[in-house]
Image (tube, rainbow, N blue to C red; front, side, top):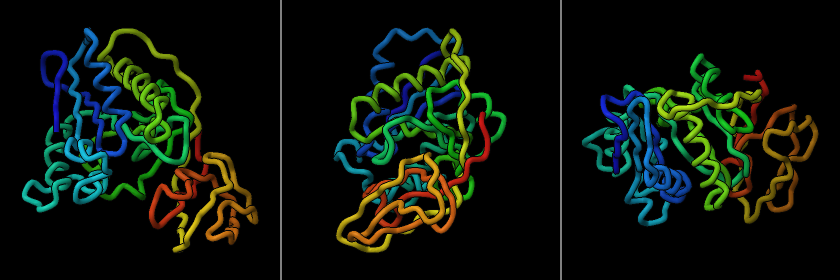
Length: 258
């Protein structure tokens, strides 16, 4: 884990990148930002989290870091020890955590709940949606403290890096770290309802588009050519053929506009 602070004093704002070693967009964005002569109005810490997994180009070493929080300092698994160290660093901070995905090219935010912080900060970020995931937070960075996760775009893409850099700047401006103003926008909010299970098969397809409603009876995916149809209306989130081992993604409902 690498930690760099900009500004004097005790930071209440943090940016975490590199939680997964196969998602380098946030790390590259942080490095580009740190290469600049930053002028800050309040201190901020930047954390490059799973350096060992990043060096290997693999998602994790022993276990998924974003399922290991708040961690355990004496654990056998590298990521559980690392989660404990990160938790100690960000426990008193509002944290922006950067990810990328195999399912959606546009950036979107993931929050533990639609609270005052989400309503204030998320409309100041260049995100297509906000996803409330309070029923599915076990082991995620939300267990370490207040956080907003960003899925910055498609994994490994240059655009995800550009999106991550822009959103870091917006977040730091919205929280008073960087001087200036942000532009507020209306952002649709969704709540995860359930995972969409994926049976074992040789090949998978996805027909539905993320954040576009699927109507009851409509085919949304296929396993070995056999179509799966929706039992009721839902909005797909993180839906992809191969992004997860056991699920296609999640079904969500639209709940609000921030």
